[in-house]
Image 1 (cartoon, rainbow, N blue to C red):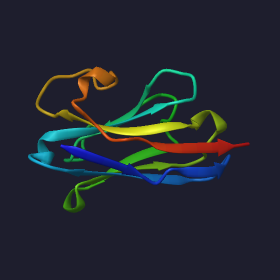
Image 2 (cartoon, one colour):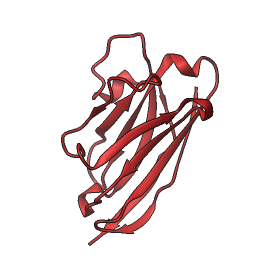
Image 3 (tube, rainbow, N blue to C red):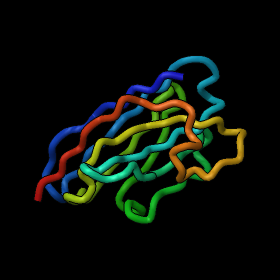
Image 4 (cartoon, one colour):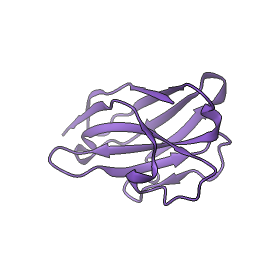
Length: 125
């Protein structure tokens, strides 16, 4: 599975931004997609996770209510809609894929088998 994240950029606090993650390759529908981020000088952290069926979407507490993950199955693309952005949301954002049929702790990065290249989001105050 190959993942291509895009949509990062520089915005002001309070602005929205939408990231995209295009998935390609064999058996994409058998994978769930997750979003992680790595703030400058910090460790990678979980943002959210979604199945292609759309059910069971999970969010980190820090983004719940502000971020929404959705999928377009026809395009094999997952989106991360980020609203009310804060300076602390500044990070490189990654999308990742995990085998959906395997029981997993979805908030842990090691559960994911494939990773995109990351896209930088900078939020200024």
